[in-house]
Length: 432
Image (cartoon, rainbow, N blue to C red; front, top):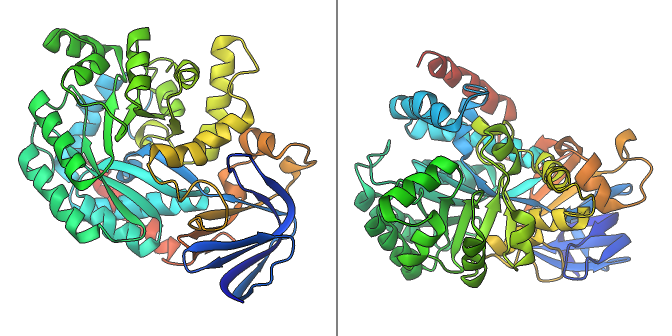
């Protein structure tokens, strides 16, 4: 039997419902799908990867980021969110954002994510057609949401044009295997009820996820209460916005009632621990939400507020932060946190074909080199991945069945050229 890729003699961490772990197995890929996981595959492949001493696992899924903001990494640190946004980020975006900025930034972000184990990411930003072109060229799975706001954005004068653009892009990309669209109204404070309802209707019409910021700061909560007489989640509930399509990023400031609403409406939540800590916006009640059955995925947010896109770092921070604030070392155990970056993240993104490994699933796979001093000895693979491993331990990346990185070398683009372009663009950023 023929396959395209066979990975041999590896440990396979499936992250399936039963957390099946194969101590030694072969994994075969044909086209975009996994066709075999067995002790000794019968498949013969054009490409064989010897992976003794290595771990094969699902690629990590970044459920909330603004990829092109890598170009603002380290630009405005150690300040309140309102100051950061209004005095630094927004003026820069207004002056510099164009398709070239997005292509350079997204290219850099995609390489960073692939090299740290991320095979899919959920983006909200501007000029997302340019982002799609870059992601397609590099080969990373991307969920792209054009930022919809009531005020003019760098590429559209208002929400009507942005919504029309999303619909046109859906026609262009709807059958693409790795480029997926979302409808992305920025937030309840940046979008009127009318805009939010139109976004909801478009998502329903096109059968797309909805990506939105919700209840990130106390100021946001106060502003929504002043405008609408309700908290952000209550406001969204009142206008009929909440359902299982929604991916709500942050959800830091929630009342008990709001947590119940999110659970009842089956809203998905993208938790961005490192960004929340860096911007000091508060402690999201993730443990409590999970207890109510809310599906949670992890996100890095943008590199302007993190300051990297390494999901291994994110897992480590999530596990430790929630233990610390509750004085309880048993919460957010390693297995749970790993699910939030893989199988549960796939549920958040409404893509059950990724996030775990089994025959018939889409081959979004990473190979982690376990032969490292900081990963020795190996007693518990889940603990190692959450508390000890880093993005730099990822050796190989396969996305949609295609080999994108091998032996830490990106195969689809010239990494040095990507970095050179980013450094050249940074000269403009410095002068804003």
